[in-house]
Structure formats: C-alpha cells, structure tokens
Image 1 (cartoon, rainbow, N blue to C red):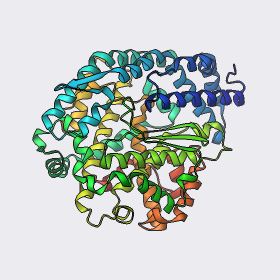
Image 2: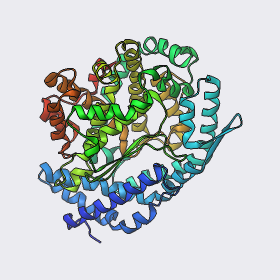
Image 3: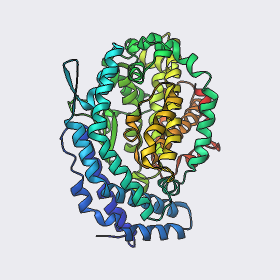
Image 4: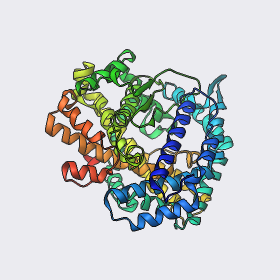
Length: 495
C-alpha cells in the first residue's frame, strides 16, 4: 500500500478512498440502504492514514517551495489527518448514522422517522405541536446519539494532541490556512452591528409567517418560520426542476446533456432531511440529492446543491486529484450560495418565476438571512472554545446554549452542542463562502447586468472558474478575480 514517499501513488490511492466513501455516503443518506458500511473502506485504505504517512507529509509540506506544490501537500496532509481521525471514530460515525436511520419519534399518537422530524416541524402550523416535536426529537438525541457524539469528539481531541498540535483549532488553522481568530473578529463585528436591528427586522415576519410574537419565540418555531409556507404560491412544486433547468439554460448549460450529473429527487423514509451533493468521481459522477419539504425550502435546497453540482461537474478532468476533490470548500460553498441566492433575487423572480410584486418576500428573505448569519457567527465563537484545547468538554453544553441564545435571540437548547458541529471547522467554510459569494455576485452584476443569469457570457466566466476545481482557496480566487480581500463585514450590506 503506497505511503507519502510516492506522492503519485499516494494520491491515486486517496482518490479511490474518497470515491468509495462518497458513494457509500450517497447510498446511505439518500435512503437507498439502511447501513453505512464505511469500516471496510477504512480497512482497505488504512495505510493512507498511518502516523508514518502523516509525518512524512508534514515534513514535505514544511519544505515545500510554495505554489501548487505547497497546496497539493497541504491538501493531502489535511486528508490524511482527517482520515486518521475518521478511522479512529468510524464505529461511532457508523452507529450514529444507522441509529438515526432506525429511530422514530412519537408525538400525539403519530410516529415519524427521526430524520423526518425536522420536515414535520417545518410544515406544522401549530406552535405548541412544533414544540412537542422538538422535545421528542431532543430527548432521543440526548439519550441515543449524544453519548456517541461525546465519544467521537473526545477521541478527535485526544488524537490531535498525540499528533503534536496543541488543539484541534490549531490543527485546522494550519491545514486550512485560515486565521480563525481574524475571521471571528469580523463575524463578531457583524454581530455587534446587527444586534440592535435583529428584533425590528424579525418581528413582523415572525408574526406573519409563524404566528408568534418576538417575545414568545421558541427555537422550535424557527423551522416553520424559515420554511415560510405563506410564500408557497411564489414557488409552486411543478416549477421546481423547470426553474433550475431554465436558469442553467440561460447560462448556456443543458442539464439533460450532462450525463455526469445524476438527479435524485425521490422521497424515501430514511432519506436525509438535508439536501446534499455527492461528488463521487469528480467530474465524471456527481449526485444531486433533494428531499422534499415544500415551497421555498425545496427551491433553496435544489439551487444550493445545484451550485455544488455544476461546480464539480465542470471541473477540468485533467486536474490533479488534490485540486478536483480537496482544497478550500469555501469555494464550492460560494458557488452553491450564488445559485441559492437567486431565489431571493428580484430580477430572477420576475424573469424566471413571473413574480411581479416581491417586496414583502425580499424583506422576509433579508430577515431570515440575518438569523442564519448571526447563528453561524455564534457557532464560530462556540467552536473556537470547543476546540481551543483549554476548556473541558463538560462545560460545552452550557456555553453552547448561552452563545447561540445570544446570537439568535431565542432560548437555544444545549442538547445539540455536538450534533450541531461539523468536522474540520466547516462553520468557517460557510462564513467565508457567504462573503465570497457576495463579492462574486457583485462582479457578475457589474460585468453582465442584474440579469446576469440570462447571459451565456456569465456562464462562460463561471465555467472558467469551475474548471479550476479548488486549486485556489477563496481568498486567492477572489483576489485574482477582483483584487479585493475576503472580508465577512461585506455581509452588513446584505441585511
């Protein structure tokens, strides 16, 4: 089995591992199979993540001259470290996924799969029933899943120290090349600047969309508020795929001619409630998986994951594996947000959906985005503490509950203090992607007008960016395109 000393063989083996893992995740989370059989995949490729391979990659990375050589080594090192941690926690991850698929909640005599609880909640007009659904879901999370989350998190922190990093934060900062402290200073400035307007922006829409007042808002009301069923007439189900196809066609892309794109919109009982793109073999085999919640949610999910899909499906096949599959995911998330933002773009609503009067909806969209941005700013502050290496895990539930409550302005349950955390500080990827997308959208409008999505030239520009995969990180890509720095404070203009 190849180790790091033969980088070409190592990269080929790593690509085989990534392809097998992504295929397995697709089959399980799309609801095709109840089991998540990742243990045999780790076993087949375990030499990729040996301590010896990691040490050699660290040495080579430290000695790299810069440019693409440094990028490839850093991306491979990040994969190797993540793989070692994934291999060490594979039993917990497998059990978490399979338990989630088996669990059911029961509320008022109605039973639903655990994974469908949030969809039920998002479509439930009765606020008290929404609260009971939340209570049942959190009770199962606490009893059945949190012990596994605790075990996996503790093991990751232990492995971090064994590998020679002082904390998981320090590890991620080095491997991602991101200054988390600088990012948090930007997001904290955003949170301070929007604290005074949160209530006034949110209150009228809460009343109209969720039937609750600001001072009686519960976390269980947010899925219904963000689902916004009152706006369903703007987003009819029969227009879902057609609107996406028409948008791509305006950019010179024929979805039906993309044999490498597989669209999965069928509803299954154990299908994940979160839409996802599974880039099994970039760019040759890319799956777009969409669960159905209804209305705006379905459009947002399809367009977001469609942005990922088009990015991966248009990557230059000749690129090195490291640049096709690895790198800064802020880039692909930025393209995903670019497409998702169209569903709250006045020009797109008029041109594609035939919506003539959208001012109320657009004001709601800004209010809901404010909730998301403040929540993720709070999550970053929390995760820096969780992974800072200075505080015990036992302190985290209370800290999480307090920080998220302050960020969103609602009593936030502490039960999700680990279930709400993605590996590798992915919260930073989302925050950076929002800023990257805002700059990218401004550039498209400057060059091609407010209806840039109808211009083949805009599609040509996007395809030229997509071809590069994730060779460059979001800062580098934005710098090459506009000469501007990536700064989250640009999001103030969005809300």
